[in-house]
Image (cartoon, rainbow, N blue to C red; front, top):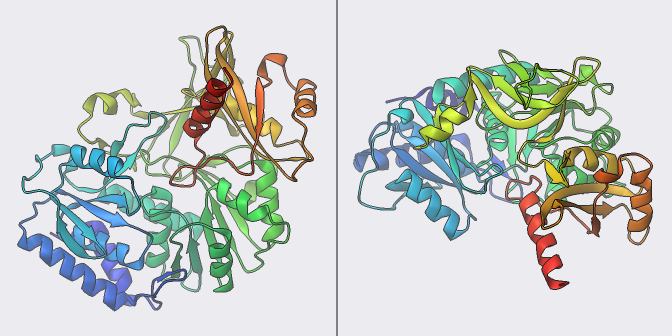
Length: 473
């Protein structure tokens, strides 16, 4: 059975004029990848893999990872990306959910167990099961359909207009839907794809020296790159940012470092097929701080958190309706049902509409800090902290407290060592916001804690605060 994404990827590789490369790795010609995919697909068929059966795909941002995906799709199975460096406990949890018999690694087949997994109606026509923990920490398998993802790639192609002359630098992991669609879009456009095995400033500089014209990353990556005031990327024509809110100052610094670049700030989730909103270059700089406008065929609404009539000036849950969304969460019908309301996906993000009609994120409903009964969106305080001239980045989190219910704590990255005084920072905040929104403590660090996809890790910060508090008792 030839699936839609298999046809797209195979056809693109047959005419791809460039090898697929890994920065500091060995390039792979498209013919080599096609052969590797053919061997992998044939191995799966010999083992009688069933249509729509989940197969784990070990990913490490290697060119051969594309061959592994193609092998699974050519065999009519469903690809489950698993990072090559994932902890054994994480792999075991994913395995317990999927029940997969097989794993593909660089096109080569491994057997995980003898028993075939149950056949699931939800996986009919599925291309991917992408595991995401969200804010709960427990893995959820997001099931994505071939047809829907293929159509979304067409939408993104029209929006971003990758060209065959482009060199696309991807430090995002291919287990992350953002990294996956950027890489696929590059191949489909006939562009040269440069995969970064592990994000470091040195790897990005190496990629830029290889002629990169497009770079995709999360704001934390760009913040790290821009910490070096001498960083510049004059040859870049498109910068894609997503995965978390892009602070205004970081956006301005990106454009200063890449004066010829068009900056696209993208908002979306794995569940909705990614990229539901885009702040395009045409809407900048006035739109900085917002998530822009809905992308093609995407609708949204902001639902109040109570039964009262919606007030667009007040924050509510951002809900999205899209034809490109997930089929559901694997083996979790209850969670699938709870994630939807009248055809809209409940993002869990709190948003409001500003006076110009743009959507502004103010935090996540599960991240709202309740300090003495007062509700504090951490994103609001983080954005305010980043306006301080000596603050490079900030992250706020709430931790349990016997007296107040929760206390709020801020991790702040100074622009220069020894020039930021927490007491002075507290007074600076008091002059700009209500007293109850000022963090109870400030922790100065060289960098923000990041998760495996490069996004901010609030749980790690909360654990750090609790550990420090317990040591001081």
